[in-house]
Image (cartoon, rainbow, N blue to C red):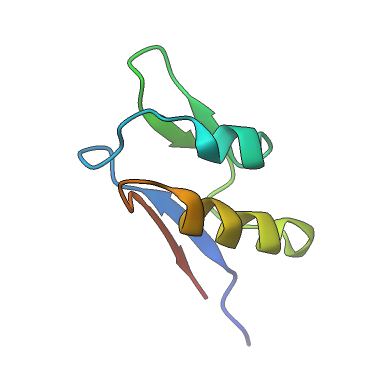
Length: 67
């Protein structure tokens, strides 16, 4: 059985740029402290491309996508 795609944010590396939230508000939200939070740790297939785009766009490499 295939493992689901997962996404995580390293809160120590996050600079709060909110690019991830702009790319996929269904997956990410920047909280009141300025740190991105993952809303759906297991990425639904229809959001997989956006998860990778957020990972590639993050200026501090705080986002990790695992498949």
